[in-house]
Image (tube, rainbow over all chains, first blue to last red; front, side):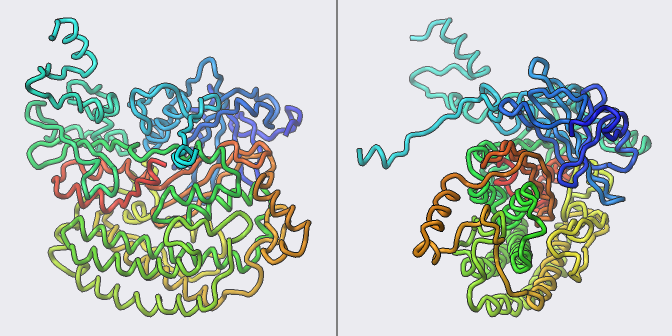
Length: 163
Length: 468
């Protein structure tokens, strides 16, 4: 995966890798929207899912040559119904400026998953019509799926009883 | 004693709550408990134009003529003629804790916003502290009406990461398929029950639960539990089918078809039933695809998309079955599709009965599979192995993978990123209901509030899966 620049196959100017037989495209944040548009023109008209990953404790993950690992990743699953194929976009999002373009205008169905990713990771989506929390309460502090979010615990009652 | 300062602070905190005096208790203090702030549906004056357009559906991929027509709908009245009301979270027709905020003009629904998260328990976070071996207990509780499908997709993703997909024994594959088809039947039977209940056919509720219970009884024979089985695990299934399983399945196959015929008499051909469902909650194929809807919703619009046929997994490519599609995209189509899918699933189950091979029910890779119970008594190595695998789990190579399968409600997908440890570094479930409820505002617009109940019911959301 760490091949030289010429060695990595490209698609719409982005490196493409294979992960267990699944195609993965690695656009930069700037390329992201254009790539999604070109893919939609090629038939990937359904965005099934979007989720975030916080790689805080695993920064050394393998990435193709030329892609700088950042703390966050936004992962989008695209589906082409006509040709029965899938592809995946992995976008690097830096911790200092966690903002990505929203796919909403292209795929309206991505609205809820983007809200979920905002809620869970604090990644903001530019031009999203309603970027509010979706699963957590509105007044919640922090973003629970971040790796540095403190895990709480509740004392188990039967221990207290027998102590 | 009530000073001006206190009053101001109270008003700030509770957002214009009426000031209470000790003599007349005000219930306004309870309002903050239900207030979701910016997540709520707001009056038109507080909604941006773009958001308003989204809520009335103009952002969907429609032709310019269609969009223009939508803008001219005479359904955007002055604010003082409408009313925003809450439906749920405890409303019986909301299938759990779905809360809808509806903007109404009289009986007519103009805007609708689903507010979710009341059942959110952070299962994706929990998954990060459970090993791949324990993960099944977690995912099975997400969409609790299709537990086998959740376990299956999680196991398939784990197996892909391990690179053992091709080594899964034949029998395990067929058992998995048997269980997920029976699960489709039990899930759709429950839909028949709830759909009937929501529309006032209360006897149907009892019948649907009754038939589902028969299927669950078989699950209990096989897995020990009615729900939340943790039966399909990475590497195969937890236990072989019990003695006499064939009779159990045959009994179901004898029992259910005449009952389905009764449903047809009770509901399908019945004028009141058709009146309540036909033309209600219509969605077009373009809208459904743009909104990422899958399963019976997208099929009801006439799009023949079924992962079992179009991207076969397990042994579905060897099965004979039909993909049921509708033509109007209304609530009746979604009802009829599910009813027909029960029959198709029975067709598949019959073929599985004939084809079920003998052999191992789980992979014989010592890395993934614990030793058989009998070996533990006689072999020290087996005991150590058993201990290690249950305390530490097994390591899964670094990488990331997405697997999607057809659950009763549409595509359920599992995205796992692994860092090489025995726990998933990140596990995300793409739940079909989570995406499907985005269709509600578009299905409800312009309909009556009584139809809203039929629409929610026809989408068949499971809030355990929506909120995870």
